[in-house]
Length: 411
Image: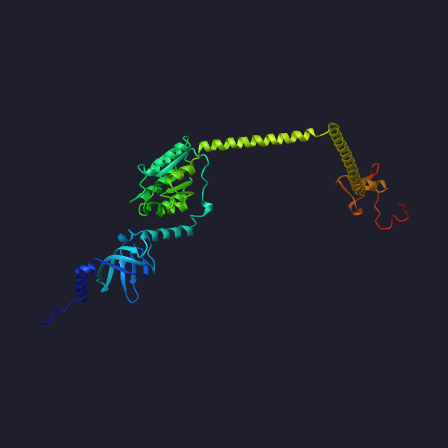
């Protein structure tokens, strides 16, 4: 009996069914090194897992990718959980991954290091971005759980050190789903409230999973963007979070944050008393020294020194007066010479000076202009002859043309 001929699609569908029904392949843990990693725009991860001799293609869909805290990369050794199935279109079997964990180190540690390196490259940890914590704050906001030990420790320390400081509690989740978003939103909202001098954000100690909200990128960026100085107070002294690196000041514990944020009035008063006593002693010493120095002076000698000083000033004034007077005279003489030279030049251009030397100017009364040629004069014209001391009104009787008529006249 001959078996029925299958299509390619039917064969692939049959093989996929076999793989799906296999109890081992339906839920499998696999160890390998990531290669050919690709973070697709759809949010899915496509990569291969390999060992020394073999590899298998893998896919991790977006809803599972969002659950891991770190960013996979080529060369990372991981342990994955998933199932083996077949992609019918290509006839290719592959591993569909539901969970992924770095081998040898925790996923949260990898995520912590990756985010720390990323933010450090962007400059979020640089000292020049740190804002100064006010020395004498009047109002401090605390972003933490309302039921945790952190707020009680902070209130206890503030009450003991300075009861005049107001504490504003902004209650948030400090662990679990959505805690990071709440902390970031609280810091952003507090920046819109006037009169807040500083923000303390933190919680008590715990595991890295319990402290993870303060390692989320959204919290780090909200702290960096805050215009109000932020003090991080997360966990115990040995606990470090991303928030610690971004914050303007890191406190090892919530109690220490309160001590760093609020001055102790008793210590302030004691320091002021000490400074006052020191200033008083210094002033007394200076006055004693000056008084002793003054008493050591001979009154006659002082009078003599003052008199000599006054005489020296008088002589200096007289000398300055002579210098100024001489300078003024020299300046006046220079200006007088300049003025005389200008007057001489102006006098040379004066037409009356020419007339005084025996010359005359002939004017046409009708045309109101000086005559320069006999061609402009006709017999019977009325003309004026201007001399140095007056004018002569004339009527032209005769016109004689020609050069050399003045020869023999002594000018």
